[in-house]
Amino acid sequence: EYVTDQSQPYLDNFYLPDESSGTERYYSFDWGHVHFVGLDSNCAIGLASRDRCTLADQKSWLEEDLARSDAAWKVVYFHHPPWSSGEHGSQLKMRREFDPLFQKYGVDLVLTGHDHNYEPSHRMVGDDVAAAGERGIPYLVVGGGGANLRDFSDSKPSWSAVRNNSDYGFLNVQVEEGTLTAELLTTSGEVADSFTLTKQLPPPKPQQSDFSLIVEGQRGVAPHQAPFPAE
Image (cartoon, rainbow, N blue to C red; front, side, top):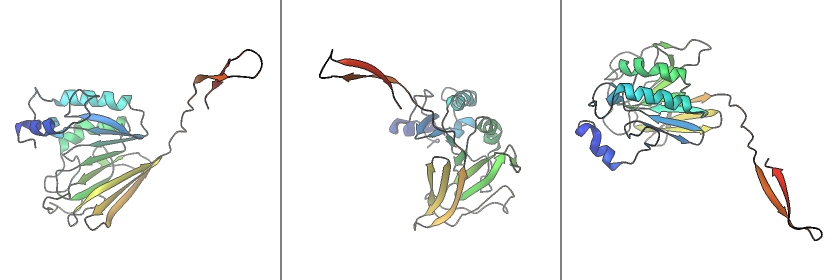
């Protein structure tokens, strides 16, 4: 869509949650206890004019947004993959500019497209696979939704966990408390790949408030009024 007036027809036809950013080109929203962030990687790599979107503004907003969120899970998605061994390869500017912020603010999963195949990375930190005990972030290319699947350009690199360019499908992600499960479902309904992320969530904060309970007795002065803490 970006080749037509920098995606303006797309933006005119879809209503995106721009309350947090003031623009539909990048935005965030919460669904349950997951914080989702949508970025405009076309803008970030220089395909947008400065009057529409800039890398600096997008990064500044992203840092404020991630810092403000206290959601248990954080998932970011955009088009160009920082890690890919497909036809287009890794988009290094997206990796250099955004991975430090993802690491700093505890992003759990990054979803991308562009290459027409499926390829999750191992947990990554900067330019390397996370060492034992390091947190790291898995980056996924999920590009088998309908267009022609494409060959991988090279042999499987060490950072690549799985490669699949033979199955059309989509990624089904479910989050239940401290467990995130992702499955690549093919057009026949089979699970071609799956992985699970887990984390220890803090106990929910007790919520207390005062309210007034009116008690009308048979004797004495009525009504009676007494405060009770909500449990």
